[in-house]
Image 1 (cartoon, rainbow over the protein chains, first blue to last red):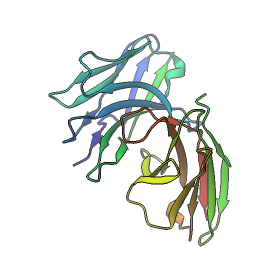
Image 2: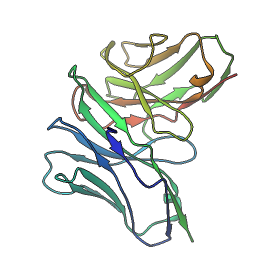
Image 3: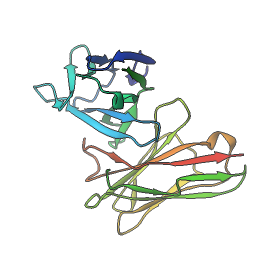
Length: 117
Length: 114
């Protein structure tokens, strides 16, 4: 089974509207972290937001919020008031310990977001 | 900008050659991780270095090797290059290893193997 699943290959949104990018995960480690990164065409991975498995409240960072539903193992990214500069590839990632105790970061396949004027 | 730098930005090699990619971590960070991102895919974890020792490895063959130096900068070496090694190689740094700390990425090195 895939550890991180992003079911939306591409999403379109109009400027100033909100958009939700889906992410589900699978782990047996009770202590894990969930991350969202943005990757523009330049290639650099830009950290957006983090949610720890024990965090009681959903994480927020400016226009980004993470809708964390632990029982459903989902960690959707919500971008409010989309801007043209938000057009990029978005990756969900999970940090957990592997069988040898090492901490690893696993990425999903990504969702391409296009924001139109 | 994260403060993580990588060199070179682009590289073209031929099959069978060897390549060395370099990464300087963000100030204060002691852990460096390397990822391979093939076109249209998410990054795949290669390995991680913490205090100059390998501290975790993904599903990559031994011809992928690395080093971390006392200043926490790092190198990724790939021997006997194959066409499938063509990818964006990303380096990420973080403050400590073994926890759930955030990793900050550099701009990447685009490697093309002909």
